[in-house]
Length: 180
Image (cartoon, rainbow, N blue to C red; front, side):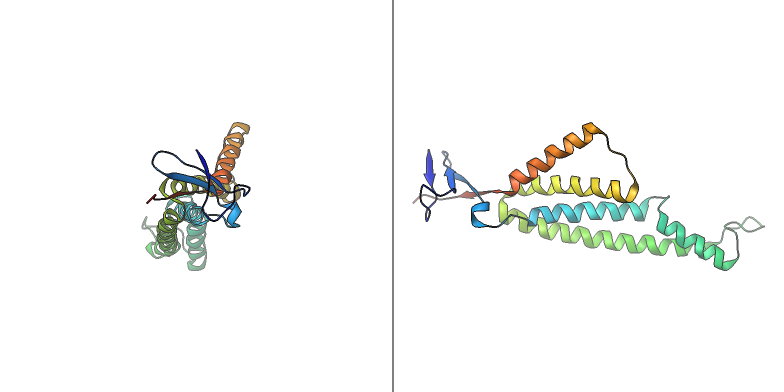
């Protein structure tokens, strides 16, 4: 049965669908706010994965650049004439990797905190879908912008469906109303 939400009239855009377990779905856009905390969680998760790639990928440009600069300033080769490795410059390349790992941990902490807030804001199912979809979207954007990944038409079509789903979920909230 269709009922109006208490405090609204039947002419309002905010109507809900009542089921046997009293689950009501209503539009968040009528309240003028979007449930963004779960989406923020997905942004932090995608950012953490991007930073982790910089930290852990052997071909990561920033740690390799640091090591090259060390070798250039030390006027040393990576391997000396006697076959030994310059461990000082190897250690210098680990500094940016350690910084990236700390940033990744920070992003993961922010992700968990915002996800917990997102679940209380919009419910477990919607928060999980919004966070996952946003994470995928942000990871794809980082891949294209920072890692020069190529995308084909089928990928773009699937991505547009994910964005459509995120927009639809972002405009819905689920509330349980107890009858007394």
